[in-house]
Length: 341
Ligand code: PEP
Ligand code: MN
Image 1 (cartoon, rainbow, N blue to C red):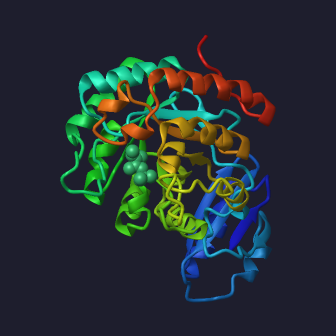
Image 2: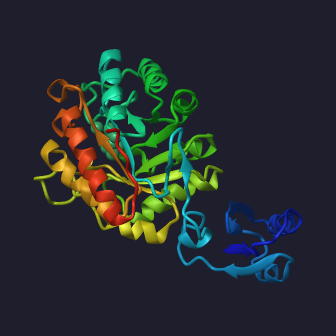
């Protein structure tokens, strides 16, 4: 259930409701927005009846949330969640582009990629330091050294950095170097990891599991929010179907569905969704047209020599062309995207 406070409710009134929720054995999860405060009531309390909260001073109304997820539900927060970046924000009018190599491979490689994507108008640099690889014999990433290289690229370009964290014990280290913590598709239901990033003070990019429903994705996000971290972005990265021409099947309908089910920003990863360089730009544009808040796209200075996912990585020139087409399209769908001239 959600307690919607009146727009003019003060600290004392909000505090009174929070104390009563706790007294009943539930956990209050307040969320403060421009149009007021809503308080999510989570957990199985001892006393079932919360109806009397409607009579508390400052309470506008109580709302039942029909979904199994509560805090991520659209009803829990009338305004969209907006996540600030060093430059710009995710979830506002701007269409945010995150770009960079699949893996951090070397200083030269990541700095070249960072300069290229920053020069073309990206806001966030992506790059994996800890890599979830299907084969234990494939390149596993540079680990901590990769994180240091990403931080160096950030200092030079002032891009924010998003990178994957694969285990709860890595969260503190990754959060020290990165601005956004990525939870990969394979870990979407790693609940210990979700709880750990939920306790971290960094935004989280949560990728949809390749065999997960949207409800499972939203419940994974609920774990993060229930642990105190409200800065969550959801990422559609393609799901596994019977189709083999594309690496995965991009569920573009997930974008409007998620935008109506939750207040959290929605990002699309066209690279892992289709897996073929030539097809990535079309899916990136489809993401913008469908109402996504941004994309995360793989770009490599020399894709044919990439240590992972070269076949789906754009060249710097290809990325610049993509950015020009997105910038031309954005106003037609009510979004902003400015690229350097
Ligand atoms: C990645 O972003 O490089 C990655 C491994 O993505 P996913 O978890 O979606 O497969
Ligand atoms: Mn990849």
